[in-house]
Length: 54
Image (cartoon, rainbow, N blue to C red):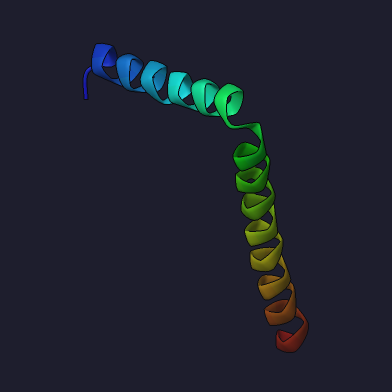
């Protein structure tokens, strides 16, 4: 992928993120909260695997 196309895609994604953040702050907060809860679940899963392995 050329550098120009990659930069255009990054600008579009960041622009959409900022638009979403400023026009719908409640939904943005819920999305961030669900992302971190999913990340926490993944960490908990691997911790459980590590504790059973040893």
